Amino acid sequence: MKIDDREHNLVRNAVTAVLLSSVLVGCSSIPEVGTPAFSQYKKEQREEQRVEVMEEMPDWFMEPPVGDDYLYVAATAISPDLQMSIDKAVMDGKTNLADRLNSLMSGKLKRYVEESGNVENIEFVQQMERISQSLFTDVNTSGYRVTEKKLIKVQKGYRAFVLIEYPLGNANYVLVEGVKKNQKAHAKLRASKAFAALEDEIEAARGVTKNSK
Image (cartoon, rainbow, N blue to C red; front, side, top):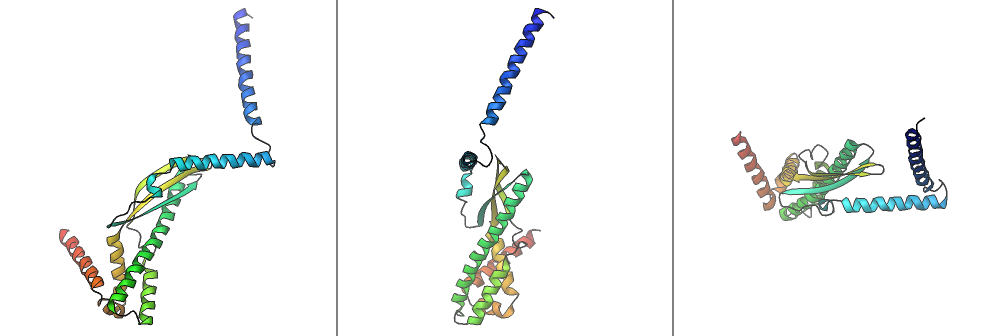
């Protein structure tokens, strides 16, 4: 063997030894599973991940936009699969959206009932409550749109943040159509000027849409 070859082998062996020792040091830095030190290590890892997620969290997640024409809902989910994390976040967002819409439209119906003068009619009030509770299902929220999306790589896979936008015009339409299905309730609720105006507004909008086709 030539001297150059011998020197080359010595250098290569030295580099290999350094790399191996680095790996061993890295492994030895992780405490043994089941020990108090390992529990502390995992706790510190979770804290580091939490801080990282907080730093990467989009502003619109903490403070969703507020508008007169749209309802905005933010949601987040985590999954080992990237697409699954998005799908789960959207699913959670739709659930939150349905809850928000139910609350919002229930408040509107309550106001319309008060304005119609039927607030003392317990049977009518309960009927309106049942209508409002059954209005916004997964199908009724199909007019939603994902307007913002952000993905973060985390220890267990991916965390997705989504912002969902839903037009309140759709919600008003669902509300009116739901009341119309009950002719007696519809007749009583039309005594509310606000409900009658809302109904006329929706009919006018539908007429414009039909004429534009």
